[in-house]
Image (cartoon, rainbow, N blue to C red; front, top):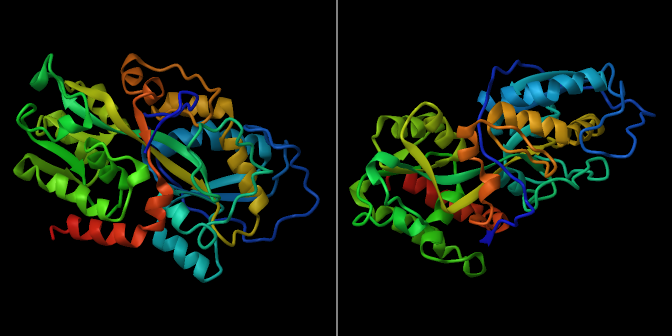
Length: 367
């Protein structure tokens, strides 16, 4: 594990959009287009006239914000039509295996992008994508650029703990000093950051990481017994905080923000937290990869990222962006706390995904 470099500007907030179905053109890329020198946020006017880009995204407030901040102006400037769909890993796999890929850009997890880089996802041509302003540590494989960055952060009830709040990962596991129910995310969706948080509490860094640590982390959570409950969706994690069902919870920072914004007495614990990143990718076998690369390059622009952050509460993935945020959003803005944040070795989890998935699935099923 590594503490996040101060020069790395990353984020945390949240937004909502209704996706419209669609698909790429299915046609081969036109010839003799001039995309110019890649500069983040810039696309040659009209260069994609007559083209359609289909974007598979995660839905919710974040997709809505990206649509307004990025894809609507991209349509105006590039001449392309942009249609949207909901991302499903099984659907992408079926597309690639049948050689009928109708998505041009897909938003997925870093773990998924790394595990299937070159198989389900194209290796990106970074000569067409300006990544010079991307936050340090947010590109973890050759098939992605960051979509958003956020924190896995302990949100705690300020009324329960008053002037003696938890301050470290170890405090999350100290039920004598900090009594009350605590929660973590545990579903079929594998999140190594949850396991890393338990290892962080034990002071075990990346240089020592082994497959045996998977069971060690799970055992540490199990040691909490009845004091630990789980959530399976972001909405559930926020509801638990707002209702007071839990005294503290390891949540996505956007959900901590959501609970605070809804008026709940909830605050972030910045002593120990872990960086999370989502991945913007190009599906393997896409018919017009240059158009996809142009979309990714535009996505990373300073103005686009600033507006997306202001609309969502996820921080920009461009180090020059300076969003104007509400007081509540500032409270949960991870860019201001990079010195205490931790990045994890995603390559380790990618390389050992089979062991991770097996242990996680058994744990999630109650085994």
